[in-house]
Length: 88
Image 1 (tube, rainbow, N blue to C red):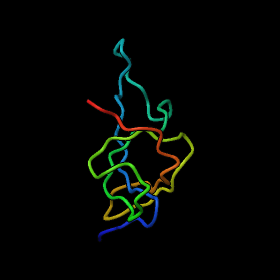
Image 2: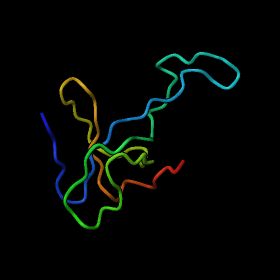
Image 3: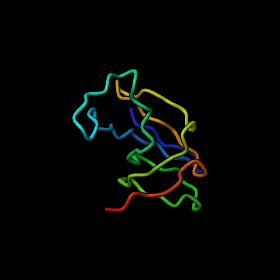
Image 4: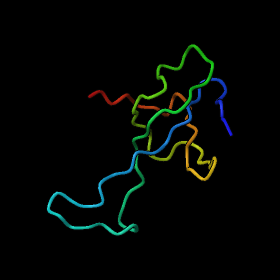
């Protein structure tokens, strides 16, 4: 199934964080925070959205709508909730 966001929205897949701290302590699932970085999978058709497919973005903590497609978890984010693009 394909999904195309409408307007100023982006479909993103969360980027998982490390499961260990810098000192080597393994974090249980209950201690992990929800990731705030994601890879852009698809973007809406608005000219105002500033990200493209493949970008890694940082988004606001309590934003987005979680969905499941083909057994994978994704989020739909409004353009206003995307705080920036991670550049390498």
